[in-house]
Length: 600
Image 1: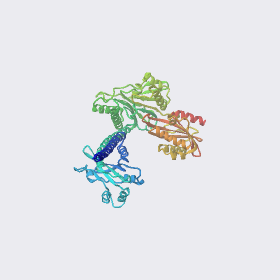
Image 2: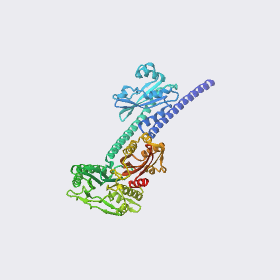
Image 3: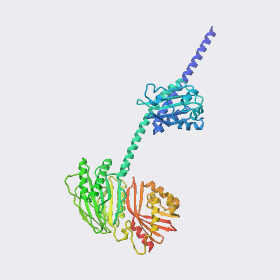
Image 4: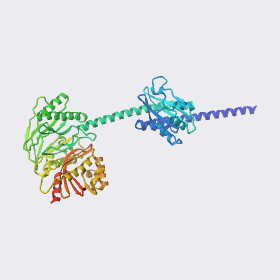
């Protein structure tokens, strides 16, 4: 009897141990599945785009609970495969084939329009009949599915915010595993986490896309407002600089513009109230209103009055200061000038810097105002300088930049390029490169008989020098290739030992000249790195032996450095129809002096 009791107790104890072992295994499995859910959540939070998020989730699920995993997104009743992962042991073409394969999502999930849309598709033992139902044809696709060797598969709808937004498919094959009902139940719980990740990533992607679209719109609008390259104005030499405040802005409240009017040209420089988008919108109104009115009337007074009415009609506190000049192509005619609330133009005559005219009320403040039109004559060699108050009001360690410092920097400036360079350099040093307000500078001078002032105007006929059409065409081809960033064409025009000294090199700290084909390619890379736009316009070419003096203009733009638009000089040495040396001079007068010295 004792043996019977002992045996019964042993059997009971064994059964209890077995049951405890089962419970322990189930507990471990449950704990492992909770860990998987946690890893899915962490993967969702760590990833970025929708595709990155879903790929990260696949990395968690394979090979832990599936030999392969695919996630599809449903958009406009169509499925798009977003993420695929196959565990080690699969044939090489399996993951590639799954990634390119059209999804096999049940129609009820795809439509999502009935109460059965969310029911999982669970295939515990994959049969030939079920493979044929999943295949898109009886040929290559069916053979591909057979080749995978699927044993079990689960497809689950991914629902978020009451809509089916995708599907998750898990499968086991080459590992020899098979899914049970408990696995299908866990997969259903898992699908909720994946659906939440899909929804969050989708919202993030929508926000990212919306932000990208807004940025593209803003950039397009800003580019439409950026000052274009200055045109060639016969009889005049011009230089300009523009720097908006703030690293993220390309357009602010300051502007300048140059455009044709009947009988001549109009130049305007202005400053509007406000910052950011509001200032940019007023800038657009000011520029295009002035353009339209000036082109129709050739009268700066009418142009200012038209803009004044437009600003008053806009309402609010939309104010704009403007200085407008009308130039004629007749050198005997004076310049007509109108100033509305703007710093008066300054005349630089050697060391003397004086105001040319006074200033009338700002635009947008009063309905009944008249702006005086004054006339000013100045000879070649004198510079007319227009600035916005951003340079006068600029703040540095020494206080305000101020008008006194402005005039001191301009004293002795011999041409527009020098005037702009001096002001830009002085402003940068004074503020340590940190501007609190936009800055625009526009400088002009008459072109006369003095060749030092005509390097961006018409060619001269000085004795002993020639404007050779063949050499002019050669320089033209080089500049055209540069504007196209055509490295092959540039290298083909240069000798293997070509040496090029350029301003861009100093901007990037390139202390030695660019040499040879590799150096020219490096130069183009540096240009692309610094400037968003760099355009050369060729003016004239003079020749003395194998030495060429080219004059023209350079327009450069970058978000960090703003816009510079100035006359520039180049000296080129040519042998056997190839360029062997080149040097850029930001001061055209220096290029001319160097050329004359080499020819002497």
